[in-house]
Length: 499
Image (cartoon, rainbow, N blue to C red; front, side, top):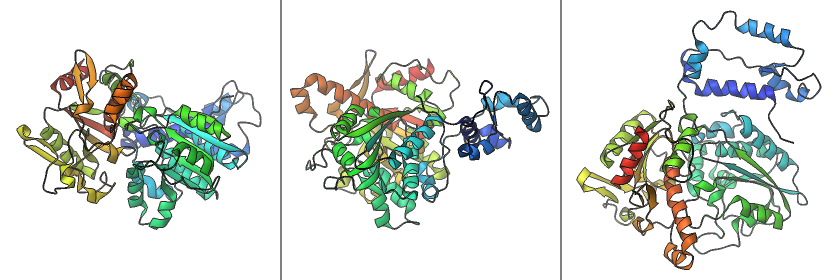
């Protein structure tokens, strides 16, 4: 049996989506009235049950014998034909990117509905709430949610955190990387004390010694970044095992195409395997609704095809009238100036780069890290003083971030410097791990891996480097600007834009 959302909820959520994302509706103050019509559905006490009354009131429900009622309902709101070509204008209206999760977090934590969940997001949310409520020491549940960038993983995860705690279930939000947690701490600090926040947003390495079943729910965001053991000292036994052991219900939000470190460990099959060993029942769901990058998954499909991660049908996303500001620039200084200009609007534009330059400024504050003398370009990696809040600090636009400071976060415009670890030769997008900085730990130990397991090593290095740039190039909700150090790659991307 397939689980789906109630038709009135569907209609109501789609209306909310239009009002939130369609520029024509906002600019012309167009009133949107949802309803649901199931022309072959005979009345019963299922769809019309009192349980759904809130959404039926928002979007009235009409069934098989209700054609006349539907006609009268429509006449209340539409007295004339579409003389102004309204439907076409809405259909072709510009799509505005979604609200930033970090900016909306304070309101969400207060119980306000900042994001309307649609389709599979709502299914995942309700399924997670049900599983959490019906989990205990004897009946443990693991929920695996697969979804790409911008499918709403973090939005659903944070809303789950709020609702589960509101219902009296001890729930924690778990990430391997500190950047999302630090941003959330910064946003929530006016309303919550730091000790309380640190108990809500925790590291994936926090459960090595945790008692079994001591937490009701652990919500693991960016689960693909989990490692087998914790830290450089390789502490603990296995992060996936420790998380499932600690909670009666655990939810893993995962995107295996965002594996960007040689030690990134968790895959869906590994989580399933550990769940089976620990006696937990597994439920798998997926998220497909796409909101990042101007609200279209066409960009992601094009990007996968461009980077030769996988072949997709979307070879040219511009030809379909797709409204996303993607540009290839001629120099890093042009890229810097573009980002500086965009950042003046609302502090939501940043520069990032592949980790191909040593972090000299970490030891010498006067040194520059990323330099192109021929273009009068010199910048530093993000300062340590920002901690992991580089992406929101008002002064940090003058520094360059990397995958470790921006994964799981978003801005309006992202400028990406692609180093010589990604090149184009003879029709192929290739990787060159030797061009990575010695300070970059994400492929640390790759030479030994290549010696011991050369074929496995090639596949892993190719995935890590390409996934890194795929992730960097999907941090911008309104636009992405790219400078490629390799001239062949620059021309290849430009040709793909023009074709």
